[in-house]
Image (cartoon, rainbow, N blue to C red; front, side):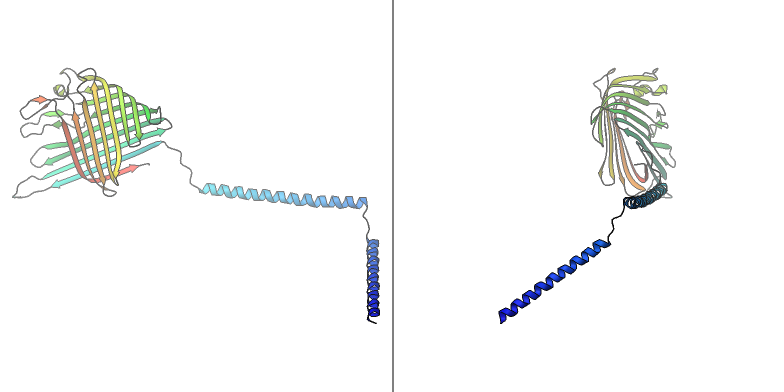
Length: 355
């Protein structure tokens, strides 16, 4: 009985499935009967309409791109116009150092004794240096003057100098230059012995006046030091006052004395510790024309400490040895001697620079 029931269920399922498939095929045929294939003319017209829409969208995109580009360019121009104009490149480095010191003493009925006095000193160190590619052109001008006036005594000069140095160099290698160096040195005011019994004139402007022109090589291993060797160095010593000529190595009727020899010059300028700068210039010269074995020495040294923007302490020394310059001792014996000057100043100092 169960087998008969199972056979009947299977037969009923098969009939239902066949009926469903037959209905699906009829629906499909009906749909196919409703679809219509477009003609060639209709397809051509549809393509033309679609192409026109594409061209219109592309034109709008191009116009929008142009507007966006114009907006970006106008914004860029406005931004550039608001920026400061770029500075032209400069190859000059200029500095100006000025120092000033003043002291005053006033005494009235002072039992311990002494004199009222006023002292004043000033110093200017100006530099203008050019550096481009293989060329260098360095210039330095120094001017210093100081005096002390004690009431009841004469005016006495304590410092007086005018000094110009110029150097032109062409880079031969990384640290070696072909160079030409010019220097000139004199003083501004008259100078005297300033002894109790003798106020003889010993110097004035252009008496003496030293000038040299040297050709050679310069070695510069670092920015803060240079060594210049010039085997071709010519110079003149000018003494305008006849009575002072023999004192500085000229003959009595010789206003200008010529020199020719070899010069070695060492320059150093370095900040040894913070706000403390050491500057020194050493010049050695041998005169081929007269006693080349007697080396002339000129050594300048300056040590400056900047306390703050305006206050500084400075010490400057100058050592000179020239066998042509005769200096008398206390007994009146004139002979070549080592000259030494030291100037210590505490006062105002200000530097202008275009670093």
